[in-house]
Image (tube, rainbow, N blue to C red; front, side, top):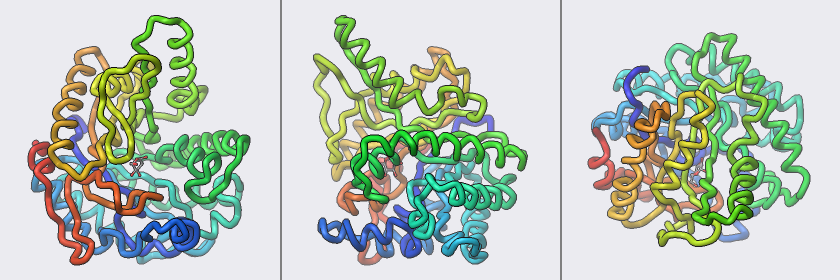
Length: 373
Ligand code: BGC
Protein backbone atom coordinates (compact mmCIF):
# COMPACT_ATOMS: atom_id res chain seq x y z
CA UNK A 1 0.00 0.00 0.00
CA UNK A 2 2.88 2.35 -0.79
CA UNK A 3 1.25 4.41 -3.56
CA UNK A 4 -0.87 7.39 -2.58
CA UNK A 5 -4.50 6.25 -2.77
CA UNK A 6 -6.51 8.29 -5.19
CA UNK A 7 -10.11 7.19 -5.33
CA UNK A 8 -13.77 7.86 -4.83
CA UNK A 9 -16.34 6.43 -2.47
CA UNK A 10 -19.90 5.21 -2.26
CA UNK A 11 -22.02 3.40 0.33
CA UNK A 12 -24.28 0.40 -0.20
CA UNK A 13 -27.65 1.88 0.74
CA UNK A 14 -27.01 5.05 -1.23
CA UNK A 15 -26.28 3.22 -4.48
CA UNK A 16 -27.18 -0.48 -4.65
CA UNK A 17 -30.95 -0.36 -4.43
CA UNK A 18 -33.59 -2.67 -2.94
CA UNK A 19 -32.31 -2.61 0.62
CA UNK A 20 -35.69 -3.91 1.75
CA UNK A 21 -34.67 -5.43 5.06
CA UNK A 22 -33.07 -2.26 6.43
CA UNK A 23 -34.25 0.34 8.92
CA UNK A 24 -33.84 2.99 6.20
CA UNK A 25 -36.25 1.20 3.87
CA UNK A 26 -38.89 1.32 6.59
CA UNK A 27 -38.08 4.94 7.40
CA UNK A 28 -38.32 5.97 3.75
CA UNK A 29 -41.76 4.37 3.45
CA UNK A 30 -43.11 5.98 6.60
CA UNK A 31 -41.58 9.19 7.92
CA UNK A 32 -39.87 10.34 4.71
CA UNK A 33 -42.84 9.47 2.52
CA UNK A 34 -44.97 11.83 4.61
CA UNK A 35 -42.38 14.53 4.02
CA UNK A 36 -42.58 13.88 0.27
CA UNK A 37 -39.07 12.45 -0.06
CA UNK A 38 -38.67 9.93 -2.84
CA UNK A 39 -37.64 6.47 -1.53
CA UNK A 40 -34.35 4.84 -2.54
CA UNK A 41 -36.09 1.97 -4.44
CA UNK A 42 -33.64 0.66 -7.09
CA UNK A 43 -31.44 3.60 -6.19
CA UNK A 44 -28.76 3.85 -8.89
CA UNK A 45 -28.67 0.08 -9.29
CA UNK A 46 -25.03 -0.29 -8.34
CA UNK A 47 -25.95 -3.85 -7.26
CA UNK A 48 -26.19 -4.86 -10.92
CA UNK A 49 -23.91 -2.23 -12.44
CA UNK A 50 -20.94 -2.43 -10.10
CA UNK A 51 -18.62 -3.54 -12.92
CA UNK A 52 -19.48 -0.46 -14.95
CA UNK A 53 -18.96 1.75 -11.88
CA UNK A 54 -15.64 0.16 -11.04
CA UNK A 55 -14.57 0.58 -14.68
CA UNK A 56 -15.40 4.27 -14.48
CA UNK A 57 -12.86 4.62 -11.69
CA UNK A 58 -10.19 2.37 -13.11
CA UNK A 59 -10.47 3.69 -16.69
CA UNK A 60 -10.06 7.25 -15.48
CA UNK A 61 -6.84 6.61 -13.64
CA UNK A 62 -8.04 6.20 -10.06
CA UNK A 63 -6.34 3.51 -8.01
CA UNK A 64 -8.68 3.11 -5.03
CA UNK A 65 -12.35 2.49 -4.24
CA UNK A 66 -14.23 3.00 -0.99
CA UNK A 67 -17.50 1.07 -0.64
CA UNK A 68 -19.60 -0.53 2.08
CA UNK A 69 -21.14 -3.94 2.54
CA UNK A 70 -24.75 -3.99 3.66
CA UNK A 71 -25.38 -5.82 6.92
CA UNK A 72 -29.15 -5.80 6.24
CA UNK A 73 -28.54 -7.81 3.06
CA UNK A 74 -25.99 -10.15 4.62
CA UNK A 75 -28.10 -10.82 7.73
CA UNK A 76 -31.67 -9.95 6.66
CA UNK A 77 -33.18 -11.87 9.60
CA UNK A 78 -31.47 -12.26 12.94
CA UNK A 79 -29.04 -15.16 12.85
CA UNK A 80 -29.70 -15.91 9.16
CA UNK A 81 -26.68 -15.27 6.95
CA UNK A 82 -27.51 -14.82 3.30
CA UNK A 83 -24.82 -16.60 1.31
CA UNK A 84 -25.99 -15.00 -1.95
CA UNK A 85 -25.24 -11.53 -0.60
CA UNK A 86 -21.77 -12.68 0.45
CA UNK A 87 -21.19 -14.16 -3.01
CA UNK A 88 -22.25 -10.85 -4.52
CA UNK A 89 -19.63 -8.93 -2.54
CA UNK A 90 -17.05 -11.62 -3.38
CA UNK A 91 -17.67 -10.71 -6.99
CA UNK A 92 -17.48 -6.93 -6.40
CA UNK A 93 -14.16 -7.36 -4.60
CA UNK A 94 -12.79 -9.80 -7.15
CA UNK A 95 -13.66 -7.43 -9.99
CA UNK A 96 -12.20 -4.35 -8.28
CA UNK A 97 -8.99 -6.25 -7.63
CA UNK A 98 -8.88 -7.39 -11.21
CA UNK A 99 -9.00 -3.68 -12.13
CA UNK A 100 -6.10 -3.04 -9.72
CA UNK A 101 -8.05 -0.92 -7.28
CA UNK A 102 -7.00 -0.78 -3.65
CA UNK A 103 -10.09 -1.32 -1.52
CA UNK A 104 -11.43 0.49 1.49
CA UNK A 105 -14.40 -1.36 3.01
CA UNK A 106 -16.88 0.19 5.45
CA UNK A 107 -18.70 -2.32 7.63
CA UNK A 108 -21.36 0.05 8.87
CA UNK A 109 -22.43 3.12 6.87
CA UNK A 110 -25.50 4.36 8.81
CA UNK A 111 -27.99 1.56 7.97
CA UNK A 112 -29.06 -1.29 10.23
CA UNK A 113 -31.04 -4.43 9.51
CA UNK A 114 -34.63 -3.68 10.50
CA UNK A 115 -34.60 -6.47 13.11
CA UNK A 116 -31.58 -4.81 14.75
CA UNK A 117 -33.29 -1.43 14.82
CA UNK A 118 -36.38 -3.01 16.42
CA UNK A 119 -34.22 -4.40 19.21
CA UNK A 120 -32.82 -0.95 20.01
CA UNK A 121 -29.95 -0.80 17.54
CA UNK A 122 -26.41 -0.57 18.85
CA UNK A 123 -27.67 0.27 22.33
CA UNK A 124 -28.60 -3.39 22.66
CA UNK A 125 -25.65 -5.66 23.52
CA UNK A 126 -27.21 -8.61 21.63
CA UNK A 127 -27.32 -6.48 18.50
CA UNK A 128 -23.69 -5.51 19.08
CA UNK A 129 -22.80 -9.20 19.33
CA UNK A 130 -24.51 -9.90 16.03
CA UNK A 131 -22.56 -7.02 14.48
CA UNK A 132 -19.30 -8.51 15.78
CA UNK A 133 -20.29 -11.83 14.23
CA UNK A 134 -21.00 -10.07 10.91
CA UNK A 135 -17.65 -8.23 11.12
CA UNK A 136 -15.86 -11.55 11.75
CA UNK A 137 -17.50 -13.13 8.70
CA UNK A 138 -16.39 -10.20 6.53
CA UNK A 139 -12.86 -10.21 7.92
CA UNK A 140 -12.40 -13.96 7.41
CA UNK A 141 -13.72 -13.71 3.88
CA UNK A 142 -12.07 -10.51 2.63
CA UNK A 143 -9.21 -9.89 5.06
CA UNK A 144 -6.61 -10.60 2.37
CA UNK A 145 -8.34 -8.59 -0.34
CA UNK A 146 -9.22 -5.34 1.37
CA UNK A 147 -6.45 -3.05 2.61
CA UNK A 148 -8.38 -0.46 4.62
CA UNK A 149 -11.18 -1.42 7.01
CA UNK A 150 -13.60 1.14 8.38
CA UNK A 151 -15.73 -0.12 11.24
CA UNK A 152 -18.14 2.81 11.57
CA UNK A 153 -18.83 5.71 9.25
CA UNK A 154 -19.26 9.03 11.06
CA UNK A 155 -20.39 7.98 14.53
CA UNK A 156 -21.05 11.58 15.61
CA UNK A 157 -23.27 12.30 12.60
CA UNK A 158 -25.17 9.05 13.19
CA UNK A 159 -25.88 9.77 16.84
CA UNK A 160 -26.92 13.37 16.21
CA UNK A 161 -29.10 12.67 13.16
CA UNK A 162 -30.69 9.57 14.67
CA UNK A 163 -30.97 10.36 18.38
CA UNK A 164 -30.70 14.14 18.84
CA UNK A 165 -32.48 15.65 15.86
CA UNK A 166 -34.42 12.57 14.77
CA UNK A 167 -33.94 13.29 11.07
CA UNK A 168 -32.85 9.67 10.52
CA UNK A 169 -33.80 6.31 12.00
CA UNK A 170 -34.48 5.58 14.78
CA UNK A 171 -36.09 9.02 14.69
CA UNK A 172 -35.48 9.90 18.34
CA UNK A 173 -35.34 13.45 19.70
CA UNK A 174 -33.43 13.27 22.92
CA UNK A 175 -30.90 15.36 24.78
CA UNK A 176 -29.25 12.54 26.72
CA UNK A 177 -29.62 9.46 24.47
CA UNK A 178 -26.87 10.65 22.10
CA UNK A 179 -24.41 10.45 24.98
CA UNK A 180 -25.33 6.82 25.64
CA UNK A 181 -25.03 6.09 21.94
CA UNK A 182 -21.64 7.79 21.88
CA UNK A 183 -20.25 5.35 24.45
CA UNK A 184 -21.98 2.39 22.81
CA UNK A 185 -20.38 3.22 19.47
CA UNK A 186 -16.95 3.60 21.02
CA UNK A 187 -17.40 0.11 22.46
CA UNK A 188 -18.62 -1.23 19.12
CA UNK A 189 -15.57 0.18 17.38
CA UNK A 190 -13.12 -1.05 20.04
CA UNK A 191 -14.47 -4.61 20.00
CA UNK A 192 -14.76 -4.75 16.23
CA UNK A 193 -11.17 -3.55 16.05
CA UNK A 194 -9.96 -6.44 18.19
CA UNK A 195 -12.03 -8.94 16.18
CA UNK A 196 -10.50 -7.72 12.93
CA UNK A 197 -7.03 -7.75 14.47
CA UNK A 198 -7.47 -11.43 15.36
CA UNK A 199 -7.97 -11.98 11.65
CA UNK A 200 -4.60 -10.32 10.99
CA UNK A 201 -6.04 -7.16 9.46
CA UNK A 202 -3.48 -4.39 9.55
CA UNK A 203 -5.29 -1.13 8.84
CA UNK A 204 -8.46 -0.50 10.79
CA UNK A 205 -10.09 2.80 11.67
CA UNK A 206 -13.26 4.85 11.43
CA UNK A 207 -14.34 7.53 8.97
CA UNK A 208 -14.69 10.59 11.15
CA UNK A 209 -16.75 13.60 10.21
CA UNK A 210 -14.37 16.49 10.85
CA UNK A 211 -15.72 20.04 10.95
CA UNK A 212 -13.09 22.75 10.97
CA UNK A 213 -13.99 25.14 13.76
CA UNK A 214 -11.95 28.17 12.81
CA UNK A 215 -11.73 31.71 14.05
CA UNK A 216 -9.68 34.55 12.67
CA UNK A 217 -10.27 36.47 15.87
CA UNK A 218 -7.55 36.92 18.47
CA UNK A 219 -10.24 37.26 21.10
CA UNK A 220 -9.48 34.46 23.62
CA UNK A 221 -13.17 33.65 24.17
CA UNK A 222 -13.68 32.94 20.47
CA UNK A 223 -10.61 30.78 20.37
CA UNK A 224 -11.74 28.88 23.46
CA UNK A 225 -15.22 28.25 22.03
CA UNK A 226 -13.82 26.91 18.77
CA UNK A 227 -11.30 24.82 20.70
CA UNK A 228 -14.07 23.23 22.77
CA UNK A 229 -16.21 22.53 19.71
CA UNK A 230 -13.22 20.94 18.05
CA UNK A 231 -12.59 18.66 21.01
CA UNK A 232 -16.24 17.60 21.33
CA UNK A 233 -16.98 17.02 17.66
CA UNK A 234 -13.64 16.01 16.19
CA UNK A 235 -11.50 14.53 18.92
CA UNK A 236 -13.64 13.08 21.74
CA UNK A 237 -14.45 9.82 19.97
CA UNK A 238 -10.74 8.96 19.95
CA UNK A 239 -9.83 10.03 23.47
CA UNK A 240 -8.51 7.07 25.45
CA UNK A 241 -9.00 4.84 22.41
CA UNK A 242 -5.93 5.63 20.30
CA UNK A 243 -4.69 2.06 20.48
CA UNK A 244 -7.79 0.92 18.52
CA UNK A 245 -7.13 3.12 15.51
CA UNK A 246 -4.44 2.28 12.98
CA UNK A 247 -5.31 5.30 10.88
CA UNK A 248 -7.62 8.29 10.98
CA UNK A 249 -10.21 8.60 8.23
CA UNK A 250 -11.29 12.19 7.72
CA UNK A 251 -14.61 13.09 6.10
CA UNK A 252 -14.39 16.80 5.48
CA UNK A 253 -17.14 19.06 4.13
CA UNK A 254 -17.59 22.01 6.46
CA UNK A 255 -15.63 24.93 7.85
CA UNK A 256 -17.45 26.72 10.64
CA UNK A 257 -16.15 30.22 11.35
CA UNK A 258 -16.78 32.12 14.55
CA UNK A 259 -16.59 35.89 14.20
CA UNK A 260 -15.43 37.44 10.97
CA UNK A 261 -15.44 34.92 8.14
CA UNK A 262 -13.96 35.10 4.66
CA UNK A 263 -16.47 35.02 1.83
CA UNK A 264 -17.28 31.42 1.06
CA UNK A 265 -20.08 30.08 -1.09
CA UNK A 266 -22.53 27.50 0.17
CA UNK A 267 -23.12 24.28 -1.73
CA UNK A 268 -26.52 22.68 -2.37
CA UNK A 269 -26.47 21.21 1.15
CA UNK A 270 -25.99 24.71 2.57
CA UNK A 271 -22.44 23.81 3.60
CA UNK A 272 -19.41 26.11 3.32
CA UNK A 273 -15.96 24.71 2.99
CA UNK A 274 -12.65 26.42 2.44
CA UNK A 275 -9.20 25.14 1.45
CA UNK A 276 -7.84 26.56 4.73
CA UNK A 277 -10.51 24.61 6.58
CA UNK A 278 -9.49 21.45 4.76
CA UNK A 279 -5.88 21.97 5.84
CA UNK A 280 -7.06 22.77 9.36
CA UNK A 281 -8.93 19.43 9.44
CA UNK A 282 -5.77 17.51 8.57
CA UNK A 283 -3.65 19.50 11.04
CA UNK A 284 -5.93 18.47 13.92
CA UNK A 285 -4.55 14.97 13.80
CA UNK A 286 -0.89 15.66 13.14
CA UNK A 287 0.29 15.09 16.69
CA UNK A 288 -1.51 11.73 16.89
CA UNK A 289 1.17 10.17 14.69
CA UNK A 290 -1.23 7.98 12.73
CA UNK A 291 -1.56 7.83 8.95
CA UNK A 292 -4.41 9.96 7.64
CA UNK A 293 -6.76 9.21 4.80
CA UNK A 294 -9.33 11.62 3.45
CA UNK A 295 -12.13 9.08 3.36
CA UNK A 296 -14.65 11.65 2.07
CA UNK A 297 -14.51 15.13 0.61
CA UNK A 298 -16.75 16.67 -1.98
CA UNK A 299 -19.38 19.19 -2.92
CA UNK A 300 -23.09 18.92 -3.71
CA UNK A 301 -23.83 20.94 -6.80
CA UNK A 302 -25.70 20.69 -10.07
CA UNK A 303 -22.89 22.60 -11.78
CA UNK A 304 -19.82 20.52 -12.44
CA UNK A 305 -17.67 23.60 -13.03
CA UNK A 306 -18.24 24.45 -9.35
CA UNK A 307 -17.02 20.95 -8.44
CA UNK A 308 -13.92 21.48 -10.56
CA UNK A 309 -13.21 24.85 -8.95
CA UNK A 310 -13.77 23.31 -5.52
CA UNK A 311 -11.31 20.51 -6.21
CA UNK A 312 -8.77 22.84 -7.79
CA UNK A 313 -8.72 24.90 -4.63
CA UNK A 314 -8.88 22.03 -2.11
CA UNK A 315 -6.55 19.39 -3.53
CA UNK A 316 -3.34 21.47 -3.30
CA UNK A 317 -3.86 21.40 0.46
CA UNK A 318 -2.83 17.76 0.44
CA UNK A 319 0.69 18.61 -0.74
CA UNK A 320 0.70 21.49 1.70
CA UNK A 321 -0.19 19.09 4.50
CA UNK A 322 2.58 16.73 3.42
CA UNK A 323 5.07 19.58 3.43
CA UNK A 324 4.04 20.28 7.02
CA UNK A 325 4.96 16.72 7.94
CA UNK A 326 1.39 15.37 8.02
CA UNK A 327 1.35 11.70 7.10
CA UNK A 328 -1.44 11.74 4.55
CA UNK A 329 -1.75 8.55 2.52
CA UNK A 330 -4.86 8.83 0.41
CA UNK A 331 -7.86 10.80 -0.82
CA UNK A 332 -11.35 9.53 -1.68
CA UNK A 333 -13.69 11.96 -3.39
CA UNK A 334 -17.32 11.70 -2.27
CA UNK A 335 -19.01 10.46 -4.27
CA UNK A 336 -18.28 8.45 -7.37
CA UNK A 337 -21.98 8.59 -8.35
CA UNK A 338 -24.87 10.94 -7.87
CA UNK A 339 -26.87 8.91 -5.40
CA UNK A 340 -29.41 8.71 -2.60
CA UNK A 341 -28.55 11.51 -0.18
CA UNK A 342 -30.39 10.14 2.88
CA UNK A 343 -33.31 12.30 4.03
CA UNK A 344 -32.70 14.65 1.06
CA UNK A 345 -33.53 11.89 -1.43
CA UNK A 346 -31.95 12.20 -4.85
CA UNK A 347 -32.01 15.98 -4.93
CA UNK A 348 -28.39 16.59 -3.89
CA UNK A 349 -25.67 15.64 -6.33
CA UNK A 350 -22.13 14.98 -5.14
CA UNK A 351 -21.15 12.63 -7.98
CA UNK A 352 -18.30 12.64 -10.45
CA UNK A 353 -20.76 10.65 -12.53
CA UNK A 354 -24.43 11.47 -13.13
CA UNK A 355 -27.02 8.72 -13.33
CA UNK A 356 -30.20 8.85 -15.38
CA UNK A 357 -32.51 6.94 -13.03
CA UNK A 358 -35.01 6.15 -15.79
CA UNK A 359 -32.44 4.19 -17.81
CA UNK A 360 -29.72 3.88 -15.14
CA UNK A 361 -27.25 5.14 -17.72
CA UNK A 362 -24.04 6.57 -16.28
CA UNK A 363 -22.89 9.96 -17.59
CA UNK A 364 -19.36 10.83 -16.51
CA UNK A 365 -18.91 14.50 -15.67
CA UNK A 366 -15.88 16.48 -16.69
CA UNK A 367 -14.62 16.38 -13.10
CA UNK A 368 -14.19 12.61 -13.36
CA UNK A 369 -11.78 12.91 -16.26
CA UNK A 370 -10.06 15.93 -14.88
CA UNK A 371 -9.20 14.43 -11.50
CA UNK A 372 -8.17 10.97 -12.59
CA UNK A 373 -4.41 10.63 -12.72
C1 BGC B 1 -21.79 10.50 4.64
C2 BGC B 1 -22.32 10.20 3.26
C3 BGC B 1 -23.10 11.39 2.74
C4 BGC B 1 -22.18 12.58 2.68
C5 BGC B 1 -22.86 13.84 2.18
C6 BGC B 1 -21.31 11.91 4.85
O1 BGC B 1 -21.90 12.38 6.00
O2 BGC B 1 -20.85 9.56 5.03
O3 BGC B 1 -23.10 9.05 3.33
O4 BGC B 1 -23.68 11.13 1.51
O5 BGC B 1 -21.67 12.87 3.94
O6 BGC B 1 -23.88 14.20 3.03
